[in-house]
Image 1: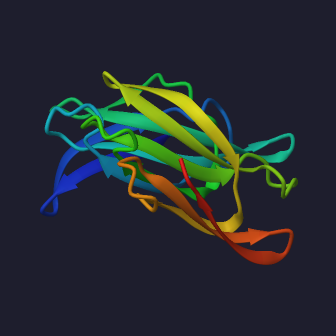
Image 2: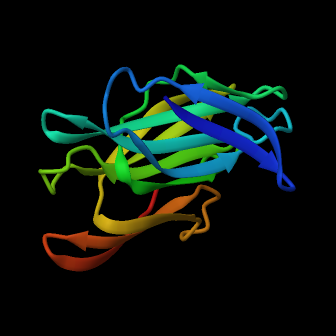
Amino acid sequence: MFTVSLTHGGKKMSEQQADRSGRRGSRIRKAAWADYDSDGDLDVVSMGAVLAPDLLRGVSTIFQNDGDGLVKIDVEMEGVFAGVFRWGDYEGDGDVDLLVMGRTSAIDPEKQFVYIYLNERNVLSLAQTFRGVNYGTVLWQDQNQDGRLDILMLGYRNGDFTAQMILL
């Protein structure tokens, strides 16, 4: 079991326990808060890793804040670890979409991806996938001023530092 706690002003507001399904070594490494369902309560997305036959396997989870606590949402997401999340209104439609970068395999350096999940009526669905970088980060920004967020990606690929702008 692992626990996700919601605190505000140092006071614990909610606590949610989740089963690791018997997997040893499960760890949440990163999390990002946003009101993805537009109900006024902050929700959270988390990434972590569990031990698997190929050493580590990524796990990505969204917890919805229903006002009384955090509830795990059944969303089909690529499991990643050692990466970052960024919330942003990619389409300019008023709701937050999710940008995810992370590894899907600990032993294959080519298994680093960037995923864009669109939020349509509080349902996240995979819209685009790109090759990512190792030991890096991604940022949303409207580089070409077309009203849609683009991606700035910084990190290492094939041993060299790279900076890449993906215009969407």
